[in-house]
Amino acid sequence: PFDVLIVGGGPAGAAAAVYAARKGIRTGVASERFGGQVLDTMGIENFISVKETEGPKFAHALEEHVRNYDVDIMNLQRAAALVPGKDLIEIKLENGASLKSRSVIISTGARWRNINVPGEQEFKNKGVAYCPHCDGPLFKGKRVAVIGGGNSGVEAAIDLAGIVGHVTLVEFDTQLRADAVLQRKLTSLANVTVIKNAQTTEITGDQKVNGLVYKDRGTAELHTVPLEGVFIQIGLVPNTDWLKGVVELTKHGEIVVDARGQTSVPGVFAAGDATTVPFKQIIIAAGDGAKAALGAFDHLIRTSAP
Ligand code: FAD
Image 1: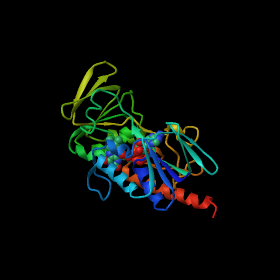
Image 2: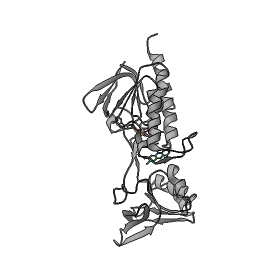
Image 3: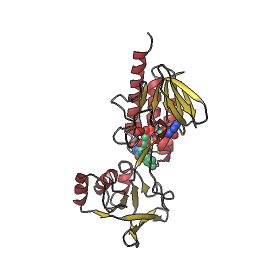
């Protein structure tokens, strides 16, 4: 069995692997796709000490760093179930195999919910974006739309209004769902237009995004908004379905962790976008992975026979 088995090989899992391996304990990483969300990212400009890089390059560097240590990397492995145990925790894989470990770190990340309209896939990284902290500065002085009027959409619109030229917030419902304080802040901004009761039907473009088409749900009329960027903010879904009923999750599916990354199951830790950690970013996930590995190590030295 492993001492630490990490499920998920994004920035959180990679950092956890390096920290665990450096303790000289038996470490494994099982992941569906080593690298994680970073593989789908173009420019990364906010990982401190790396002025700018590209997602696939960053993912490669993560893997190279982990491979520098004695870590058993099991790629293309999807975990299907976690079975708690007194001494050993079992991870059942989708292919039928099973892995056992004295502690587990879950770092299966999250995925942005897609809006599934024509243009979304085509213009990803060419004007279609999901993360205002990441990509906001790319649209300095330009016109953007934010789709989604929940807390994350309204926060994104407020954030972007300080950087870009103009923000159009498009909400499907007849009212925004964000907290009142955020809505007040939003409506106080001169360069923000809010369009409610509007269904986005298409993101248009040539090489890059040049507009957004929405249907007024009251009149069924189609309208086009010329712009350079569209931020889709209709939810971030943690990859935690396989843990339901076993590990405590929030109603949004985030794994509940304490300050050391400990979950509700003894010996099971979690890190990164899959958890309740506020703000989903690479540097935060990496720091979180390091923390969970140290938490797991601390757990091991307290629970193992001398
Ligand atoms: P992830 O990167 O999501 O990794 C999860 C890992 O778990 C993957 O290896 C995945 O294959 C694996 N996995 C999932 N389910 C299972 C399972 N059941 N069994 C086994 N393995 C599983 N952040 C920034 O800081 N700067 C940026 O510029 C930036 N740009 C972004 C651009 C895009 C397009 C996207 C999508 C995100 C961006 N982010 C950016 C956010 C950043 O990528 C995430 O915050 C970060 O990758 C989270 O790391 P993680 O390790 O928690 O999860």
